[in-house]
Image (tube, rainbow, N blue to C red):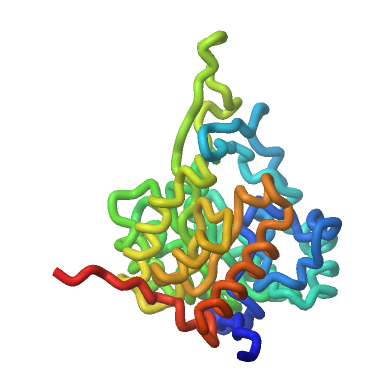
Length: 308
């Protein structure tokens, strides 16, 4: 049997395999070059970008929890101008598609970011972050209301010809309703889930462990929730779905593909095993070969439900 085909097309983005990094967990890609060639990935999603520079939240910003971590980084980044000047030239040297995650306090922020990045070049798509739970303004506020989500994504859609991916929050009553709203606004794909809101308390000091008090929970602990939401959303919209949330192994990734995801993003696992994405790519390839499956696309949405 020939080598299985791992390539997928995500909203016009040609990916050599369905594995990408999740925003905020791989920096700008170069941070992982000591461990593997990032061009081996299907895509990289770089650290969240805002219009103005952000210092982020007070420390401590990260805390371990059972089967996961809490983080409250607060979208620390150098701002749009520095990003275009210092990072875009590096992206243009890569062969892997680079997706830029953008966040704002206002709809106008999203509009400005999209317009500037559309002109900058070296970028394969924009991921609209309407779901960050640990910033004081903007962030998750856009992602928990269908109308606000629509407005943010619509503003980006109007300013760019690049594929637009809406990153969804799990901290909602109906994630399918939000997904339908951003699809109507012109999103070419959706990614989910961002982190769940959580907190931890130091019982010795009786103070929050995180400087921001609350943060986003990620890691294996959130995987069953993420998997269920990916399955729900993939049945509710026509655009491709990027699944993420607690993916640590190839078996985890395959579950998300079977649930309806076209691609998967690796996040917290990068901090445990810097080679996690390439290990997962290799594992998916072995699974396909061992099961006589010629093309990874045969797995997408392949969940078999029990008959009543």
